[in-house]
Image 1 (cartoon, rainbow, N blue to C red):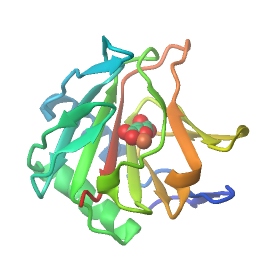
Image 2 (image 1 turned 120 degrees about the vertical axis):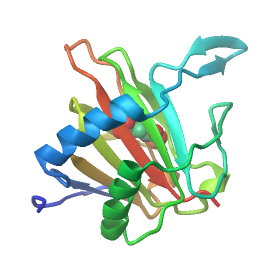
Image 3 (image 1 turned 45 degrees about the horizontal axis):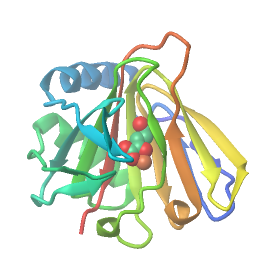
Length: 196
Ligand SMILES: O=C(O)CCC(=O)C(=O)O
Ligand SMILES: [Fe+2]
């Protein structure tokens, strides 16, 4: 069904990209239904005591009721919808892991972004596997080595693709979706995680 996978050659990182993990038709449909049905929210983040709108919309789903906290935000989960369960099952087959939780991001345009971070919250455990699905506009996913920020990689995350990050990746690498001045449409990203 899907094309050849691409294994990124990162020291102390394990990142694999599967373009067209979903067919174009499936990806088109999922984009539409998620855009319409997900309860997208705009969270406030606090930076040095000042409050800002987060530069994207988010939503959380989980099958164990556990909330997820990052950047001073605590999100309470919705229960999985049928289409999210379908996506989850297909991703789980490839990842070889049962996920509890899905964090969704909606990047409305090129001004929306996700700053440098690692997904290293305590509740994700030591070497978390994170499965990231993209629908809609393509955006670059940047990676940089924490202790030598000149070591960088970028990969274009395309409509219907899957990106797996696993092993020690979150200890040694940070990632971001940068703002872009290019005219880009909406993008939906789903990151499946295990929250302990
Ligand atoms: O939008 C993406 O591809 C990345 C999302 C991400 O890094 C996150 O939600 O932790
Ligand atoms: Fe992340």
